[in-house]
Amino acid sequence: MFNSSRSFILTLFSLSALFLGVALAAPFRGDYAVTGTHAHGHGHAHASANAKANAAHTAAAQNLTLSLTPRGTLEKRYDNARFTYYDAGQNACGSYDDSSAYVIALSSDHYQNGAHCYKKVTLEYNGKQVQATVTDQCPGCNGDQADLSRPLFQALAPLDQGVIYGTWWFD
Image (cartoon, rainbow, N blue to C red; front, side, top):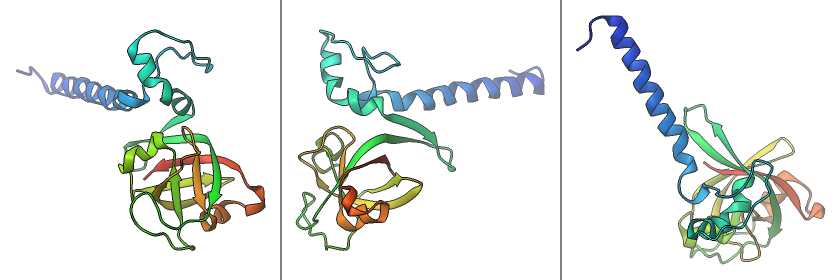
């Protein structure tokens, strides 16, 4: 099959490049594929069903960054996300959050009917990173916006700021 070790090594490199290409393309399939949007962020209306299906995700995808983790996997980071705060308590995941918990309420786009309940996320603002748990849905949030429990917000900024813009991602 291989005439030399050189041809074997070249075949391995070719296969590696193929698998890497597939792995890098995978995050762009599904909900995060943006159709009809130019690189500078101006969307155009399309009559296709695909464009309508992705319309809810267009704003979220425009602020999406893909980062390579130390483990060698890609993670989706939601940049310039609007963070506000709320008083935690009874949550949409079916439990009760105490007033000192670092919990986050996601928009329906990301909450996905509870699909992310109790998953960990990392939030970043002004050089600070804090980990939190998804326990609630934020009905007033759109796209990548999130509502943070008071102590979680305070770990990033003073409450009197009211609204901050940062980055978050699923761990």
